Length: 289
Figure 1 (cartoon, rainbow, N blue to C red):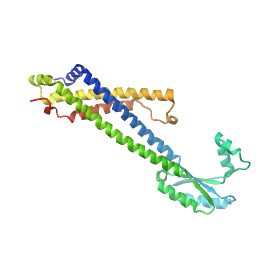
Figure 2 (cartoon, helix red, strand yellow):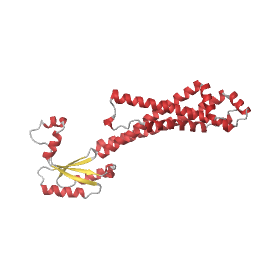
Figure 3 (cartoon, helix red, strand yellow):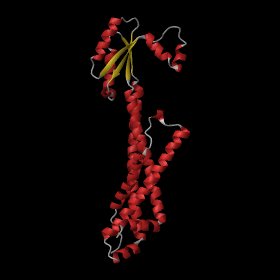
Figure 4 (tube, one colour):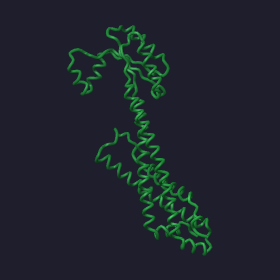
């Protein structure tokens, strides 16, 4: 018995059921695909935030160059510190003035309001450890000649906490959608078996084994999953293109755009959902004696 031929024949014969299953699977895969892209790009964005972490050590007015050199040495000796760069107030003023927003703000001052500072570059391990960053900032604050420490602590921690909450919500919702998709495939097969008892009886009478009959339903589910995956992949691609060309909402060109690999993964995911859903269903309990 040609399983693929029989499966395609059944799908054509029961068009409404096939169409319903494909649409539901496609919808779930669209949402799952969006969640996956959000998760991937959220991780990329968090990585960029962490990579941009620098600690600025502001120095007291009138501090001598010799004292600055001593502070720089102390900072470089700490674990996790890649570099400590002295930034005179004149150089800091030039940097701020290169930004139009800051330049307008600085124009209100007759004198340079910026202090001398030391820009501390930390390694990746320290960037990912908010507790160690806090400890290092406290250490810097105790050094003689240091007036203030700035490293966007609150902003970074709030964003990381928010990102963690978003990640948990997405994981839970993805799990629910996955289970729902598998359950939907299983329910569809159950309904299909009930509505096709006569067909199954004819196949059994013609010598087909239960394994062969089950194989038809498995192939049907895989084909439905593939169709749902292709439809979801196409919809996601069109949705993303609309976002790029019309809404211009993608973040700074670093968004992981949908490519052929992702399209194949979505299609493969649909086939896998179809396979799992079909394997979870015991056809012999419903196909009659």
